Amino acid sequence: AVATEAKALQVWKESDGIFTGNPTKLDNARLVYHVTPREAAELTYFGNEVLHPSTMESTIKHSVPVHILNTFKPESKGTIVEPRSEHPSRGVLAISSKKGITMLNISSNKKLGSTSFLGRVFARAEKHGIKVDLISTSLVNLSFTVHESVTQKQISEFTEDLGDIGKVSVRKERAIISAIGEGMRSNRGLAGKMFTCLGQEGINIEMISQGANEINMSVVIDMHEQQRALEAVHKTFIEADGESV
Image 1 (cartoon, helix red, strand yellow):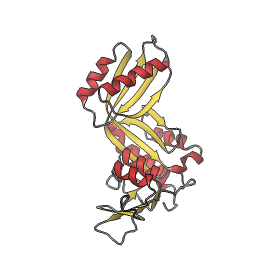
Image 2 (cartoon, rainbow, N blue to C red):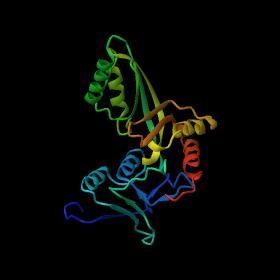
Image 3 (spheres, helix red, strand yellow):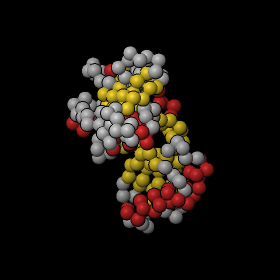
């Protein structure tokens, strides 16, 4: 599409498009008609199989709209990824999740300053091919999740290599639950709502991460609580909002 300077790219798949949640896990998931490139990119990375990252990168760079359509239901409206689109008022667009995640917590031995501590940890992460998903940090403590593509052998070798930097704890079988939407930055109290709905379900939050762009708010929980968490967060942010997406 980019090479031919096409006005749009059509991607025909086996689903109607992008949903507010995985329809195989959430009965009340709704089709989303319009998304921004940043929303599509976040959803792709955090569990919703939207488009290949390379496809997203090329079309965003050249402002080519992408129409996601269903091969078996050509009459469906599908989803349009609009390069110049912004939807600042709609808050959370969709809920996504990933499971089988490993979380590491590293406590500094306090012999290093905060910058040196973080620098050495990530230098060794690169050395061992550790791909990081989410990060939460303080002056003397660093927590992050490891991408599911990284092997347990790599993780073990990495943690052993950190012995001179600090104490390392490993938690396996974790899940990431993410609330994603461009409009989150202009809607106050969303983090509180997410923590409250999970707390009411008795689900413990082990880590919290939110970028400065405020398009993605993610929490790490026990993998065995994933389904209940998905249902609770989707009900709170999506089903309670009757607006079309």
